[in-house]
Image (cartoon, rainbow, N blue to C red):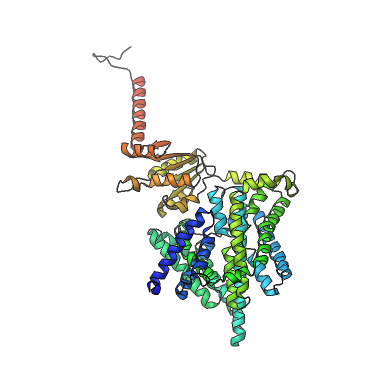
Length: 572
């Protein structure tokens, strides 16, 4: 009777997720694996405690919409352009190779043509979430191979969009055939173009002024982002494009705004929470006996993903003039399939194109490749040292393109990351800028960010105490991090944003020196104890400088004006 209420069942699932997630973390496994395991344990194959299918499905669908919204808001075409052709060539090459040979392997294993196509396409998607998380943990997100990996992940995301649009159109066509409406496919395509046009108009005329106004109340900005994702997902589902495509378009609508990093950082925990229910629902629908029936096929497909995908990336990058080390490290990032792979095949099951067996097969491949690739990326440098003697065939002499890219990448680094763009911070930034020092300003006040950019300098809008946001800042190569952020109004040391920023920045991999502003002797002691290398005291420093100027002026006056004796005569 305890589980008779929806609240109690959700509470039980959350407790199970926390417990299994802790065990998985101790075993160094990704949370995705743990969450699917929770679904398997709670599903009919084990405890059979999942009864609220409709409620969990609703949370799952909202999680997918938010996930795709965050993918859309991160779609940065400029990154692909900055890396030249390598992102496009590697991304398309890997997708084509995996799809073609995956299809042949599927046929060789006795799968029918449609199932082979679905499985092959599902194998082409790599997990952006896992790759970004692991590269961030290793402080390699800003490295050359990390940036190239991010570039071809964007290409994969675009392929995901096209694949889902095609599936949605096919689903609409199937529904039209049953209902006798021959024009539904064209209707879906027309609806897609209409939504795309609406996004373009929104970006051109509405996005920036609206988000700037909403950013004055950060909580309202986050609520608006969730509302936009849900609204576009609902519209996409209504017109036949699907909730997934709608959610992604909502993200694209805000991708050009200066607040996308803050929105992304604020929504990341919500995404992880809601996706918990997607993976639980997925695990609860899987039959362990069904998974066991595909062990041989799952092992073959898993070896293909774990070995074939890195090799094709290594070969393409080597042919384009990159070093074997860079190609190897970038190639390891695609040695797994994505949560989108499961969503893609699940859409196929919903449309009646494939059976639950295909979903079980892809899920098992996902479990194997995600777990294995976690170790491959974590120990990538050791693996390279092990296989380095065998990789010479993939490297051209001179590697001219890598030298060019590495130089361009190094030139884009910031020398100083400056938090707080008030009067003091702006004065510091301007003086550093005039001396040729490249500074990135960060502030949570949209007006301050706008003023800073009007001065011709680069700035990000974000919260200095938000770990997700700070972890994504370009710390690599920066020699100084400067904080002019004031103490929290309450004056409580445990609420001091500066101390939090120092801890978060160090955790994010910043190894340079830290300077922070202090307004009292007590703050100076606190900051020194927190690991600040240089404490800036605006009032004291200004007073010292003013005293120096006054003394200097007085000294000049004494040398220019002769002294007068008691009788009024000039001395000497």
